Image (cartoon, rainbow, N blue to C red; front, side, top):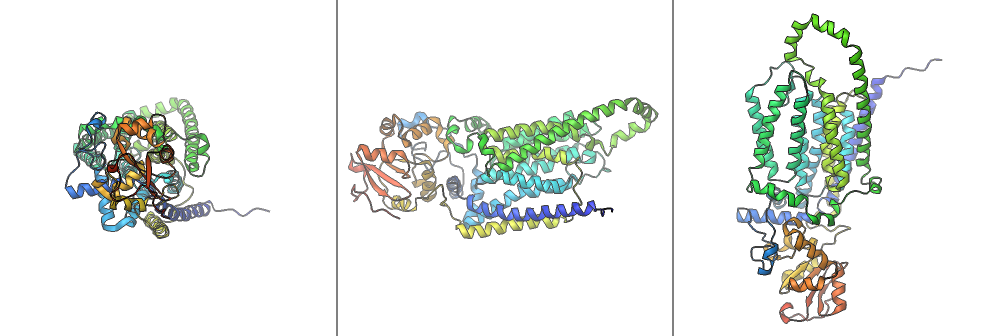
Length: 578
C-alpha cells in the first residue's frame, strides 16, 4: 500500500499563510502593549516641555530653563559644577510636542506605533521582497525582532533611530545583493553601470539623511557605524562592480559625515557624545545595566535569546558551507582552467556586466555582516537599552543568509495587502489599549504613581527656597510648570554632570554625608515619593515637617526659618489625599 503523495507547494503555502495570520495577531498585541507602556516613561514629560519652549521662543535654549542648579541664574556656589548644556534632541522634542498639541496623547501613541511598525516590520519585509529573499522567513525574524525590542518602546527620540536604521539598510543593502549593484533603483541587471552623477546623488542622500538624523537623536552614530561597515564590505568584495559600489559608498559616507555637522552645535555635538555615552552615572540607570544570564530566559528577553541562537546556528552552518565550497573549488580548478582559457575573449567582455556578480558576493557580505552582528548582540547583552538597536543592526546579516536560503513556499499574499493589514492591526490594538488605559501625559503605571495632588499643591502654594526633588518628579514638575518648575534635577543626568547627580543619589538615599550635602546645596524643601529613604530619615531626626503627604508624594520643609514655609501654612501634617 502506497501513501498518497503530499504536494510540497501546498504545505509551503499553508506555512506562509499561518505565518502571516500569526503576524496579524502579533501586530494587534504589539499595538495593545505599546499603548500601555509608551507614555509610561517620565522622560516624555521633559521632551514635550523642551519642544514647547522651542516653539514658544522661536529658538533653542542656550541654558537649561527648568532647573535652579544648572540654569542661567544658578547660585554662585554651583558655578564650578555647571555641565555643558546641549539640547541635542531638539528636533524630536519639537515634533513630539506639535503632535501632542494637535492630536493629544493618543496621537503620540499612533505616531509611535507607526514608527515601530515601519522600522521592525514594513521596511524589513519590503527589503526581503526587493532582494528576492524568502519573505516568510523574514516575517518570522521580524516578529522576533519586534518582540525582542518591545520591552523598551517608550516615546523617546530613539524611535526615530529605529526607523532610520531600517531605512538605511533598505537603501544600501541592495547595492550588494542585486544584479548590476544597482542599489538605488529597481535593480535591473540590464541597466548600464552608473557614473559620477549617481555618486553625487548618493552623497546628497547621505547628507540629507544624516542631517535629519543628527538633529533627532544620537543614534546617528550607529548609522555611521553601519555605513563604515558597508564601505569596508565594498572594499573586500571582488567582481566587476567593486569600483561602482566603492564609489557609491564613499560618496554616501562623506555625505553622511558632512550631514552630521549640519546642526546648531556642529563639532560641539561630537565633543558632547563621550560624556553622554560613558558617563559614570550610567551605572545607576537600570536600562543601561548589563543583562544577567537569568534574564535571558525570562519572558521579556526570550525573543532576543532566540535571535542569538538563530545567529549562532546560521553562522556555524555558513562556515561549514564555506569549507565545503572551498574543497569543491579546489577539486574543479584544473577542469575550469581549460574552459576559461578557451573562452577568455568572451569572459573579458561579460565580466563588465555579469548579472550574477553581486549575488556571488553575498557570502563575503554575510561574513563581514556576521562579525558586525556578533558585536551588535554583544552590545545588547552588555546594555539592555541597546537590544532594539542590536536586533535592527543584525538584520543585514539575516537577510544575507536568507538570500541564499530556499523559500518554505510561495508567498501567497502580496505585500501590498499584507503590510497595510499589519499596520491596521497594530493601530487597532493601540486604539483599544489607549481607551482602556486612558492615554495621558504624565501616565500612571504600576511602577510610577504620578503625584497629581502634590503638583496642584506646589502650583498653588509653592514653598520658598531651594528644592530637592526626586528625578522623575522633576520630569513631571517640568511638564506641569515649565520654566517655573525650578527643579534640582530630572532624568537628564548627562545635563547635570557626575558630581551633582552623585550628590543627588547620596541625598535621596540618605547615605553617609547627606546632611552635609543638604547644607551645602542650601535645601529648604523636598519633593519625594513616600518610598524614598530621605523623608523618613528627616522625620526621625527633627527640624523638618511634612506640609503635604499622600500615597504618591511627600513634601517636607525646614522648621528653622519661617521663610522656608508656605505663607499661612502651619507645620502640621496635611490631610492625606487618597
